[in-house]
Length: 120
Image 1 (cartoon, rainbow, N blue to C red):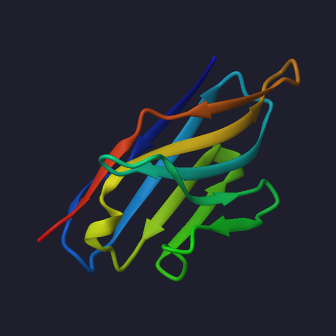
Image 2 (cartoon, one colour):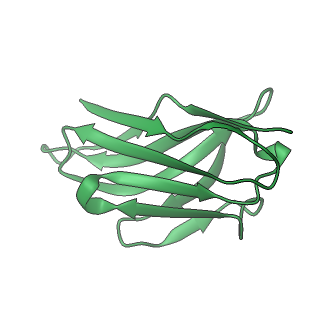
């Protein structure tokens, strides 16, 4: 069993910053990709940013230059630093991880989401 716990969401004014964190725990041998997705009201879930275990990153065009993904492999934690936030960044942000368990099976796990609201 694997658990992803997100934190750091909240209400912020346009132009402000927030930092999201997601810690993975449980039956973990190693973690391949970790990342963040978001889902705005009435829209489909979309990729925000991902990072491989080796440090390669991928960002949605809409957040490039404003958001930065980072991870601490020793802590099984991924972060998302969000700067210059815009109202259109308002969404529930979900943590995602491709986890290799001790049986060497790869499981795609999701957190329960944390709400980010950008509004004045």
